[in-house]
Length: 434
Figure 1 (cartoon, helix red, strand yellow):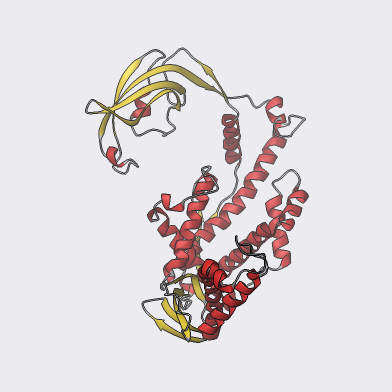
Figure 2: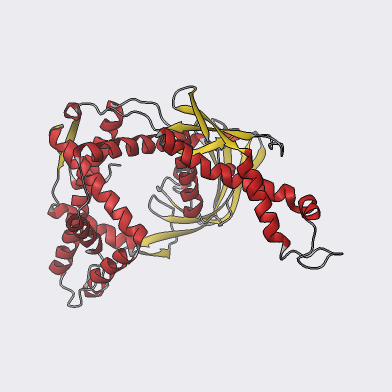
């Protein structure tokens, strides 16, 4: 085997591999001889089919099969010989099938290599650390949220106001012409929720059941439908029903729904505070982690392997399909790459930087740390022990926890070197941050 490697542009490499044609011919001959013992062809007894007939009937297919196997095997061997670590899958350029009397045949693989990542001075990174506590007012606000989550609604005979849920029919038009997707019947809408474009919900405020009204709106310039961006429209709205939100009282029955059988309000508050404090600690770590990751990306510039970015884009598309109930046989080309490029590039970049930091600083995810992390994750469930056992029985889940521990270790390492400024944030302010 002869191997030559050419650096083209950036991280791209073209590797040409030459192999003896005798290897190909020998394997094709061996497979045809093996097939001769079992194949049945009309006009010949089993095991007595002449090689010339087998060659004519099956030779081309067997040759392509062997050729593919030789390319796959030799590709890995050639990379090892040249001590090359490819980033992503290669493109094997079209190759002419070698003549039977040829001495050798060759193919060219085009691929990218991992970039040389030279770590910068992470002590230059600046971050903020959140100084946040759960106050009594935060607990009271969470109790109100729980009331709203358990609210019921009842039909009222009055004008609709913000916070009400209304049932409406509507037809949208531009310059007197109805447009696609601008019509609905019996649609339920909470006023003030911001589900509709600006002006739509506020235009319904003051209407009573049975009333109709034309509401004039302007579609935002960044609206998702290209044909509606910035357009003035009129919605003919008929209000059919107004429903008022009814919040439950915080009584013994309400409290019992949260597993506190004696109906003690102080016990409920203690339970709510405990959950909030657990979520707060997670959010503080995430707040710091997001800053560290962003700053780490900004500190480093290097060529990105586009094959890895493409793989990450496809992974993001796959996740989106699954999130919105896509089928198993998905055509990822249905979605354009552009909306995913920025985030995918950042993920690949962070992955390369994290890998380099882990290697350089000898950061590990030891068993005790992984166990502690799983215990934290399981603490919020009714049966934590069962959840822990499930994590240890699932290799993929266990690997994901190990990766998280590694990430957290890297974040702590950088945080210890970075310039950190404490910042006071309320519980609500911190929880609202991305």
